[in-house]
Length: 523
Ligand code: C2E
Ligand code: MG
Ligand code: MG
Image (cartoon, rainbow, N blue to C red):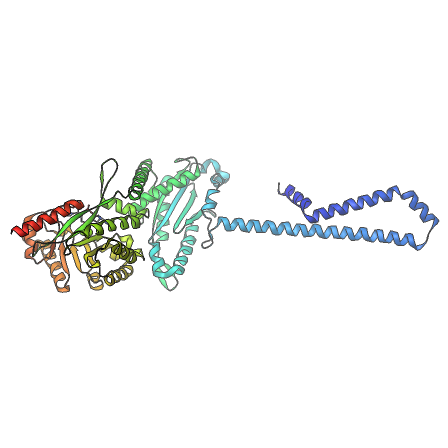
């Protein structure tokens, strides 16, 4: 086929046309010479003068020159064809390889011929090809810490380590920090070991420029053709297993199982429903009162997102907020809810604040302060009446971003509170580093045994810490009067919990305010 193509290309090229033309001209001249041979012969005999000799010499020279010219053209053409073939090979290599790590890319994977892996021992190999989908954990942090150059160095080193595991052309880089390895002939008990070895190799520290960095890795794997006959489908199933592995914590390996598909499709259905709910603006806020323990006044309401899907099922905010984060919906959802809450809060008395939760991923949004500022402007809520709640764990993962964000909030006049204190690392260093207006002790800190015990002592110490830092302390999850009395006696400033009221819709919150006002007036 390439040979035919070369001849064909040659005939179509200008060199080819010229050579053919010359050939035709030579053939025509030969024919004429042949037809005139008797005439010429007679002429030569009759006239042996220089005219005819010169004429014959010219014909010979022209013929030779044409021959040389044709030869040169043929050589030019061959060189040109070679250059073209090399350029096409280069273009193909660029299209099928990642420029940074030089590994084959997703496009190469699409064209990967798994049957080619069988080699001479096809019988033994078929049925034993395993696809390992690999994803790094914490790669983004390396980029932030060591810069993009550091991130690149890490990826190149990861590619080098991976390449040591399987034959050439069987490690792919599919995107950012996603890789895929194809291995053949591994018996089931060795697959798990192989996956663990991959993790072990990838999680060793890497020298990235002048600093050492380290990432985690998750691996999901599936078998061809046991799990699916189409190789592309096996890659997808390995990805499904990877998703499960990631969910179960860092540095996990997981073999694909059919049950995973049901979980993935349930998630995909929930994802679609969530997209529609956000599009149709069907997620609302409920409001839970925050009570000043010394005066008994309402000092604020915490907005808590509520989603009742089409079937009437209430879906937990923890579930749909993290899903919204994963699928890139957190910003539109946040903007919708905050705008709604600000509008509703603008109708409350000025002394009542609105508390609003920020999800960890939002700390990375460099436009967040501007976004909130715009919403406050449009809804007319005074920034001094808004309080953003940031969880401890979010601060721990992105301390630099959190610092900038908190500074931005303060400049706008927005208050900041540390939410769920006591559930995460409870680092005292955080309290020194960030300037909070409030600290909310998590409901899990409400001691079971109020009278004595270590729990009670810890809570007491935390409340004392707040006092010495001059930060107002809130206790969440108050359900009983005894608990209220305890925190009141310990000098806690604000209380929140079912004892004062469950999260309620906006109209109920208005009625709650009116009723409390009425009780006060009567008293
Ligand atoms: P959180 O910010 O700590 O909110 C307090 C949670 O405790 C709420 O759960 C509330 O209903 C519950 N709670 C309040 N008082 C009591 C009590 O006395 N006893 C018990 N057992 N629980 C009580 P909810 O509404 O399910 O929200 C859970 C979490 O979801 C919130 O925890 C918050 O982290 C997150 N969340 C809710 N709405 C939003 C939102 O709009 N944006 C973001 N980013 N996160 C939200
Ligand atoms: Mg909160
Ligand atoms: Mg909380």
